[in-house]
Image (cartoon, rainbow, N blue to C red):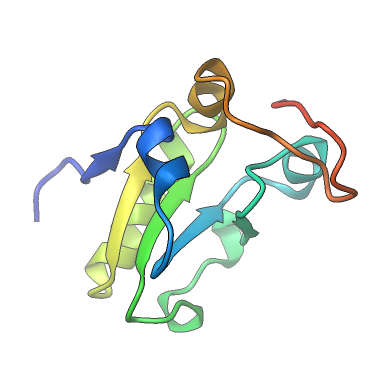
Amino acid sequence: MSDRNPEIAPCDAAQRSGATMLIDVREHDEWTAGHAPDAIHIPLGTLTAASIPRDVEVMCVCRSGGRSSAATTILREAGLNAVNVTGGMAGWSAAGLPIVREDGQPGRVT
């Protein structure tokens, strides 16, 4: 396996639909401050490949891309089709993409 995981730009990740899953691997306080609207929260410390459907493309995101790269490696080594969102939620925010809190109100990246 390459030392570098496949990556996807935040704008491209936001446009994906269908058989994709956006997993936010940040900690709970980061998640509650703001996340991508369609993301699923699975902190990196609790992520296992067994909990992810094998028939979907998985996009992993964190604050800046480090933890999500680790998550991508874990999932790819288990045979899943996983990619890292470049720049993480900081890149998502910089691209002007929506960030929400759990109550649906606008959120922020911490």
